[in-house]
Image 1 (cartoon, helix red, strand yellow):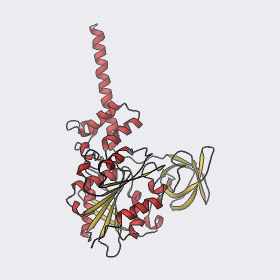
Image 2: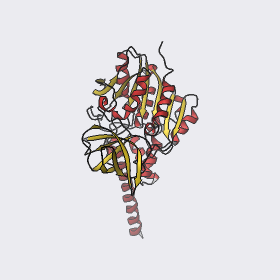
Image 3: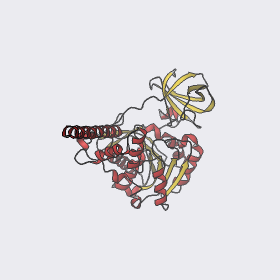
Image 4: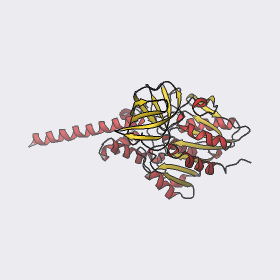
Length: 379
């Protein structure tokens, strides 16, 4: 009996250790920068069309981008022309660079992948923002004599080209744009621990971008953030010593509650809820953040829960989010808008997945941004 009990106890301990190990692995994956993986296949192409493997993303309405040929080529795709035998054929609208080939590819919502002058048709200056860890490349669009600026912040694992979709409408409004990169991005200094901090340290790089804009005459700064960029922008508006310059926020599919997103992602990875919760605790643990996850500092996830912290919001927010977002759930955005109807304007989309609202309906997206941003005139 004692032996059986000891064996059972040993098994329970081993099981607990194993569960913590799985939770630690999950937590590390959340904060580890990784290059995005290919997610579709180019089956064939002509001068006017591209045929891909059909799935929910590649058959969605709208305009999209496609990296192909090992990332050395990028093309812009238009509407679906046909779906047949598990293949979808879309319009080929343009080639940004490289030569398209049959094989693995990555479907994306950027549409304008750059270089900006070629893909967007707008000449953006290459500039460097002096951040706390060193120089960070950015693209700048300057409107003559304008004192209004917008700082555009991309999401986790993305690239600043993700933000180019906003440049044209802001340019038309007479708003200068600074499309930024931040720590751990290609061409940027790595964070001291080499890991993402989910906006809880990256906000300092956005603050440096505000300082750059201020040094170049900005009197009004609007912050745009996609996905984790939204979480970063929220931290910036809350913590920046230059927050008085920030007039409003535009958030596209933002993370407004990291706890909710991490629980959702744990479920997508078929992890039991208790293991997902342990993963969150490891990220924020003062004792185990370094040993279990590799973080230089524990992450204060409570500080990144804006549903709970709704009373701390001080800036008007345009919150754009698709109900079917399969990466960052729509629910917290809806909850935040419910908590602060005085400041948060929620605009729900459908069939846009994650950060692809512009792609599905660019006219509506730009109309919303135009109406929200245009009134902010600096006398």
